[in-house]
Image 1: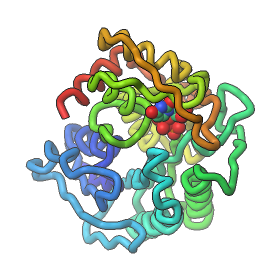
Image 2: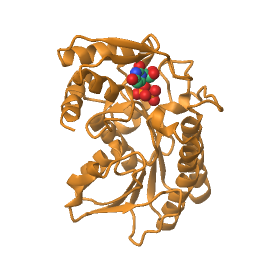
Image 3: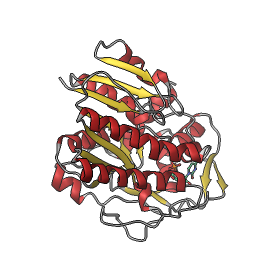
Image 4: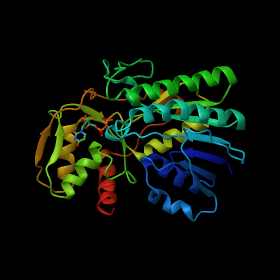
Length: 309
Ligand code: UDP
């Protein structure tokens, strides 16, 4: 039985990960300050004796008495409208928060995994994006606090590995969806599903020709757990290469809910990437991982979840 600390454990990805790690018979310490997450997400973990919740803001140093085998460092607001609300907080979480977690990992000799992001590729000029692509990020735009925050977090991870030989892992996560997404996070999957279920027009930003590649949460969890268990220290993409336009996503959701789509066009937010598509050759080779869940079946589960919350 391992003791595993999950920062951001009450968020969408974190809460699904906590449940999965408990089911695999680990002790889980969930650290979250509920800034952009909900305690209800971990209600099914709370009655498990191997689960502990600590309400803590990782911008402050974190002291833990137990031994810790592994740390999954996921804490950071991730939805554009939410991370843009207080950009300096987002930056502090990624820089100071990440340093605090790396210090904890150093003291405890824990393995530590960073949830980085496809956002570090910015407005990509090549497609699909391999890990060797260095990205095209605006340093002073409205998305920069997240994009540059994650870039500095990756740098810190490599520097702690190089200086202290810390066992670090870096995953670049592409758009992910599934149960426990915050209904009001303002992201495209939740916005469109809520709007369709409420019989409202969907808000399509721009002309809807921008693309994303959506992966289901279970595929992501398989990938990050495999990465933690590997000895690969460099960044690795985990995403589903099934790239679609946002307009296509709207029509797929209309079809799955038997709804006639009403669309309201809104301006494209500043610096909104025109495309995103993971090159997953490395994940296939190093982790023997590839996504399994087909978009429609994952969306059906997500619609059911959002209908009931
Ligand atoms: N989007 C949209 N309508 C919405 C919310 C988002 O058309 O109500 C678009 C957004 O402009 C972007 C894509 O959907 O091009 C994905 O946005 P999201 O906020 O989910 O994540 P991102 O990939 O931009 O971080």
